[in-house]
Image (tube, rainbow, N blue to C red; front, side, top):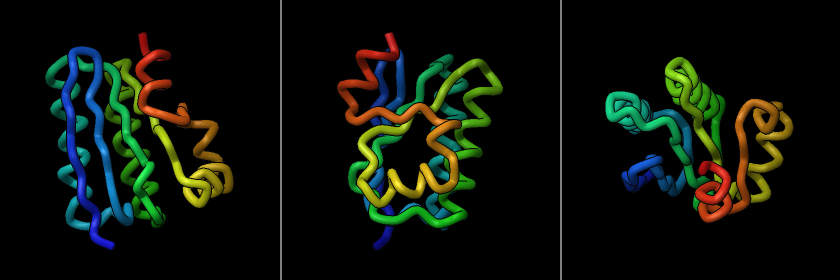
Length: 114
């Protein structure tokens, strides 16, 4: 399933809603560019909603790590929200749940970011 996305910009954070399979294909560089935009706009919080992501490949994982590294290099953070059970298991297996802060919902992320 082709990945589609929607970006919402707020004062304190960028919210990226992705839908489909996160496989780091031709959409990957565009997603990383959104992080660069956030950095340029002095935004320190980047939230990726995974509620409609069915599958993440190793390239997709690499993409998430690239985005996280870019944000952390400027003192920012990437948060993941609403992963499906399948994606949650993947985050645990790959130990990414120890690297990323994962929230159950966008609302929880907003309340914890401050």
